[in-house]
Image: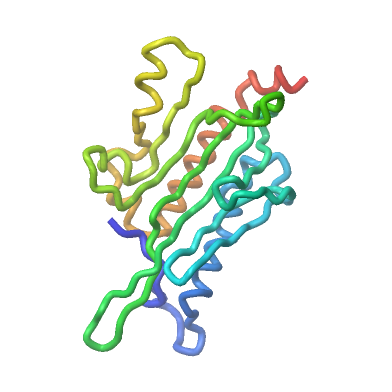
Length: 213
């Protein structure tokens, strides 16, 4: 199911006020920043990075530090001491041929929110847990992967934890994926709800406050 940003979706605007496709995709940047703000230790110091080509538009969020390596390397500190996060959306440009005129649009390829535990001594980091959305997946686990789903990572945990959890797609909206994926607006609201849940249940856990003292 395609989540689309298109000029044809502007139903309540006059012709003069209609925005072009590039304007519409840029508006997504501020929306994305607002969605992840509740997770950030310094919400007013979040920045949007944009990487684009003729067929691709990638939005990522970072803090004041400019990280080398592109959108997958961008990070921001979270409200949980010792936990950092990265968020990006990948949009692909497409053209649908129609009788009157071709319809050009962007569709969401993926939206990924990752949480990491930095390992300063080793100058590296470990994935902690991941929130993914792969709306166009058509594989064996598509019913769980297309909408928002969690991956729980493990590193030193004994078997079977590391054999099971990282490979599992824990769907947050199973049975409701059609409603969630109906539009970019409905997905955004589901993403806001997921961020609120993760903030309350994970990032505000007493553990983080104990290690932050």
